[in-house]
Image 1 (tube, rainbow over the protein chains, first blue to last red):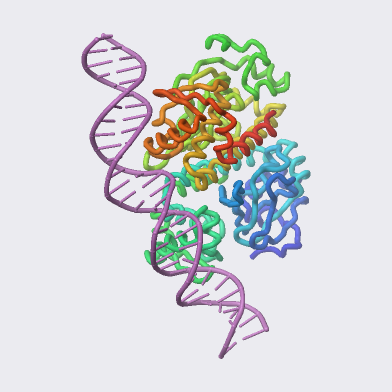
Image 2 (cartoon, rainbow over the protein chains, first blue to last red):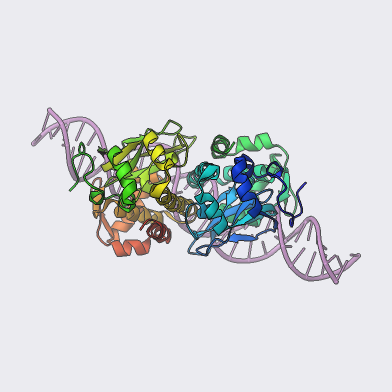
Length: 241
Length: 241
DNA sequence: GCGCTTCGGTACGCCAGCGAACATACCCCG
DNA sequence: CGGGGTATGTTCGCTGGCGTACCGAAGCGC
């Protein structure tokens, strides 16, 4: 299903990444030769706060967390990135580094390109430019919605939203996840996640056992989540079809 | 101090807007003739959720709130925009509209340009493109930091941060502000703001009377705020000097 | 200077989520 | 098959902020 990590790309439409698929042919032909497939392992770091961002990653099947590290050392997730997008947007936006931190939340495949090469390619104008702008807008919207959501909605709703967003990006109904990890992403205690997840489980929306979750009733899970989920998803659809 | 609202711009360096000042001369000469100065009144709306964004506003002395409207009707601020930037970024990013909502939080001057004209000008490439990308990155960072901050920090710290960010953009140590308004921006109850603001007042950092605040000890207010304030400010300095 | 509106202060009971523990259950590895 | 480590379950008291409500006071328009 996924090509071996060492092989190069074998044609635009073989990719699962939506940005690469949407790229005009001519742009892809310039960019393609610089793409290098690789597998990302759990918690593998893609770039770190205020250090130069070395590569831009087009995500195929992994799921990336974009987090902000606070003064007290706590990290909080501000966005989730999957095959709809790319990690390393600051490079597109003309920054060498950013205060954010990106790592793989779910292991999987990605294609990377050196930051300098990517910057050059973007500099050519072309279709990549516009595509990435629209993607920026969608990611922008995701973060803005999360910011509001973090303030206004209770844990159970946010928990449901988070599961759905990860679910969409993983593609499979079951994936690895501990309460501990989720608690960090959501910025709450582990014990509090246990309660919220327990509620979702006993309601019959999800099932989990020791580090694995399975969504069994997606529709009702979505009904339980806050509207933020839909707002974010719809905006992605609208901007990066 | 501010030009009459009806007059056109009288030269690039007369502007207080940092983007316009940083714009290469050639770009400014193309864009300048399309700029139209106007005064923004309190709560004047610049664009609304999912409606076409008619104008892009370069802010001179007003302060703009970018808010997200939630399903329950509540609005929460996700970013503050002042003379360091511009309202209507989705136009730059190739969107016709956005789920956000922008309005004047503090009245003042701005220069606006029709969205279509702005889009054309950006399409020319040039210096505007890169400048706006870096600005996008800075705004991006502001929102990401706010998202984390909203989750992690107590009201008093966020309150201090908010006051500082507005202060920086207003330019004057005193400005109009009610507890009620601030409570909406911060996503808390009015009564809770009264407590937090009261604490800051009795600590001697600020003074207020019926809808006006005055910051009397900026340094100590900054010490009371969370580190998010500095992270956001420094990133603006770094990207849009 | 009067009255109305708007803003701020305060109080009540309530609840989500906190911090810190400790108890259990699962699963992998030896 | 039996540890040991890791994940989950549960408890305790605590606190920040909630919803609601009422009151006083400042300012504005007349």
